[in-house]
Length: 157
Image (cartoon, rainbow, N blue to C red; front, side, top):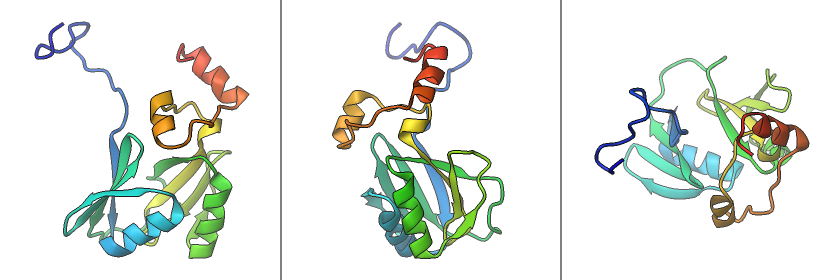
């Protein structure tokens, strides 16, 4: 396989992961302040109507201009090292709390009606490479026995 020819295994591309999630918000400055108060993220870049917040090897894109009603089922899942720290901040910020269909989840609406579901890294199969975790200063994170079993069952551990 050459770089320009791409994979020859199959005619269908394989999903590898998600590079970023884009959320529509009312005000870009307020959204940056909100998400930076909620979790530790670096501002990667911005334009007049967009901002990009680094999440290690992925990012959250914030786009100014939302005119839809608050989300009920549609959501984005955010992985953190400490879900309870997020819960405390969400309550402090006065966000609307929602019941989570995921037993390990924490669901809430951000100020613009985006449904956010927060889970802890150790409890789910989602994994970062050792190099990415180290670069993020999170190289001491581990996985629960349940998450390790799920990864092993899929041949990912």
